[in-house]
Length: 633
Figure 1 (cartoon, rainbow, N blue to C red):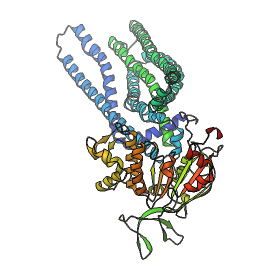
Figure 2: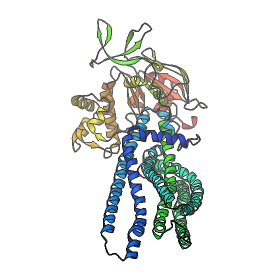
Figure 3: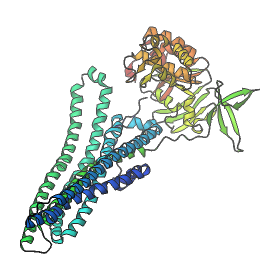
Figure 4: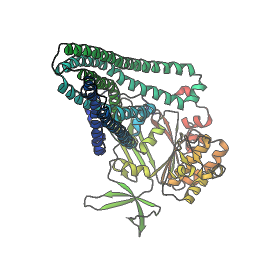
């Protein structure tokens, strides 16, 4: 049964900028308090040296140049010493700037590492339904684009904002202590700058949020079409795909354009207002000096012109950083949406343990014996042990992926240890859905499922899945060696056990022909291997897990008929003594099944062995002989 697949998921929750910022700061301050304390010290040193440089103009003019012009002195040694002193101050400022930027890079990368760790850890705990209803590309966008906006904010926006605030305070103190009238002129222009900045950033912030969401949608679309490129080409769907992409890309372009147009015009406007301030300040200072206002000297006017630039420039930088911070917070909110998703509840009190049997009595042991048991706590504090044998029972099960649509109706199946149960039927009949319920990927709506007489809702999901082996139609191989991919079924397996599993699945022959045999590194899901070879590795992976229950969902669908016969012998050996659920369209592979269940519309309409169903000349007979008419559906 196919599962619902949603488009890009966008949270409908209201924005919580304060909460998002608070959580982000908890990452920053949680592990990097000392780093940030050092950064603050270096920022203060850097800002103070900048202010001291502006005030040095006044010192040079009023304390050295003007007196030398009046007296005609040619002794430059005092001025030279003052310049050397200022040079030392500038060197300290440059080193401080270098150090705090270097430290913030360390902090930024460390915070991103912690956030990515939390995201990936949460992703491992999410139920399968999350990945069925969320675009993989949009999820990837949270790891890449959204995380990159955080990197920029932490390594650039935050330190620049701190630096700007400290510089503004330092310059304001210096200006007030130098000349209050000229300070008032500067503050009037700054008020106008802040008003303009607020208007522009207020309009652009919404577009930056929309830009991040649109970017996730574009990434999701691209990821989907890269995976389905063969289908696109087979059905000549290129133009339609291009049109759909152009629509999403145009939306992203519009949001990004609106956001960046407003952001990019901010600096020119701020710069011109700064020039206006410079002119007005020069005029006001000149008028006050001509009028003979006490305390207004050429050195003070020159210093004030420098201080005014040092005052407005950080304000402009802060205004520019606001957009980066807003975009980063939008990205952070999307990241925290993933982190806040409800994890899969593993629940249950019954666990799977290694066991040994002496005189008919099971006991828990630490080493692998080949015997497993369900460990169930009792009310008196002791435990009971039930041998894991693979007795499976579905009793009047009803299920739907969504509340409004039931896809399985009153399903009852029993499988005794060692039995082979086959599920057949048209696509969408509900066969794969049953396997999803056996593995407890989804909770049933009604009915019960028992495993060795224990309700699976009482079994911890991780332990339940450890007792099951699964070979799917869509194989997935991880980046790593062939041996590592097979050993994925049981990490403590020895090399010899890996070889044996490969031989059982008939994969040993082609593996040894690879460039490095079992040490050949596979990339991109097994690029370079045929689909059949990948399927053989998936079968070997299940074989090495050695579970009592096997689920084979079209396990031989990608193998040619000749190879299928060879593999089937290995599969028959693998299935010996195990409870097996088989889903197959090739009915020739299930003729020896103990029970064949024929499904249609989420119901079991026929059941029995091959000979019985053929004799009944019903739906199975039609499917087997090829006389089934699809229009009957």
